[in-house]
Amino acid sequence: MNPSETIDRLVDVRNLSVDFRSAGKTSSAVRGVSFHIDKGETVAIVGESGSGKTVSALSILRLLPYPTASHPSGEVRYKGEDLLNAPEPFVRKIRGDRISMIFQEPMTSLNPLHTIVKQVGEVLQLHRGMEDDEARARVLELFERVGIQDAEKRLESFPHQLSGGQRQRVMIAMALANEPELLIADEPTTALDVTVQAQILELLLELKSELNMGMLLITHDLGIVRKMADRVYVMNDGVFVEDGVTEEVFERPRHDYTRHLLNAEPKGDPPAADDSAPVVLESENLKVWFPIKKGFLRKTVGHVKAVDGVSLAIRAGQTVGVVGESGSGKTTLGLGLLRLISSEGPIAYLGNNIEGFDSNSMRPLRKDLQIVFQDPYGSLSPRLSVGQIIGEGLRIQNPDMDFVERRARVSRALGEVGLEEEHQDRYPHEFSGGQRQRIAVARAMVLEPKFVMLDEPTSALDMSVQAQIVDLLRDLQRSHDLAYLFISHDLKVVRALSNYVIVMRAGKVVEEGHAQDLFANPKTDYTKALLSAAFDLKVREGSDVAT
Image (tube, rainbow, N blue to C red; front, side):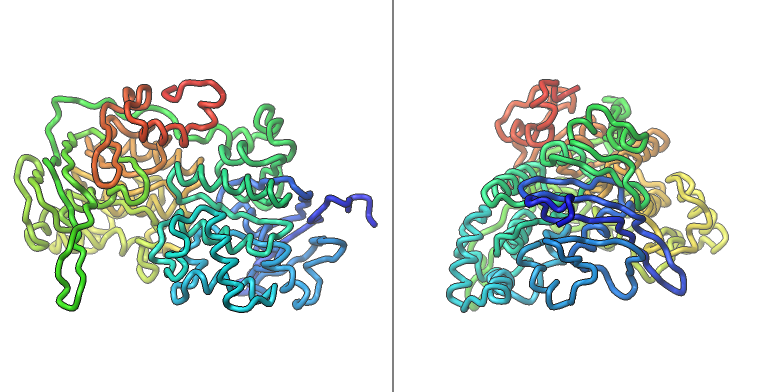
């Protein structure tokens, strides 16, 4: 046996390279990386989007799109067997059994046409040969172990009937069904609320300890790495630039790129709010209730009170942050304010009541009331060029504007968000996540709005890109005296952008106040729990949450 393949060594990756071939051109995604994972330890690979993290992890189980992908060099040793060159039947036995993977987005990883009990049970039937009843009992046991509430009632649910946190727990149950030796977790908490994120991380730590399992953690969140990992590899442009024991890398980073990542957290303060500035948008006792209908005649038997009596006022140049867990009513509040869904209660735009306005009445106001959505890739049409996407609002709101003037306005909007004029002739898939979010911001800003609803605009972005988008939004707010409604579960970003913060739970406001006061002195247990989950490392290290 090779000396490096100790009894405790699970996987030994040596000199791994990954190339992708498209349209006759070859690009190198990973170049000669080596790393290993031992039994019972957690190894993290960190880096920004496109650095090669996920490609390296997928190579272990040969999950890349072959033959588009290829390995010019490398070995992936598992118990003496090179998985890159092993027969496919052997790899299939390992995949999902001895080595399992939690993918980044559970909604796209779970089959929408099958119940969750069928999908998790399939893993047990395939690798353990269990009958239906035996597999169902094991799935129920797994669901209870990973903390799914009312597990037995949830067995026959479809993925769309579960929350993001519940879907992620299903993915964990599926990955752990056969008690693997190695778990690969690819951004397992990216889009989750801070409290759910903390629960998922604690669950993974418990299960790893219980099963003495190795874990490979792929993430861009350094806070998670510091909490979870024993060793860390820092990746940039397809190569490792630094590696070592986690605490040593954090305390004494040697490479400039590592220092860049450690300093990439959104910082700074929002533009100072002027309490005498005009109120752009306000509501009083706003309600958005969805009827619950049952029976043959679809009689209304109750209501889901998504927003239940919320009042707020947003002034020019001010940002009101809205925080809370999934399902608390944050996004529904914003949609209700903009009359994109039906609501009850006075809504005033620049002092004029718009309550009850239908879509035709609202159309002239849409240019002043804009939205930047959570997922830029999902909100940008893949069939339209960037110029067409940004210019669409101009074409609708200013039908007399000619092509030359419209293109000039699009160019100015792109320049404001840090992109180039020639980018308007390209398509969304040709841009990174951060660039796509800048395009989404430009689409809103080209109409020169007075109010912008920002719905989780940084949740899926790398830390350094988050910081860039936050700086961009602050600059645009100063330049145009914009009013923002900023919806997020990321309290670090909320703190960097918001003057005033509203904390929502189950459709109601549980606490609100000036951002600095609320972060320094939270009053309710719920707000304290959110802050504790978001700033866990800082609290444990003894520093003030509000600093």
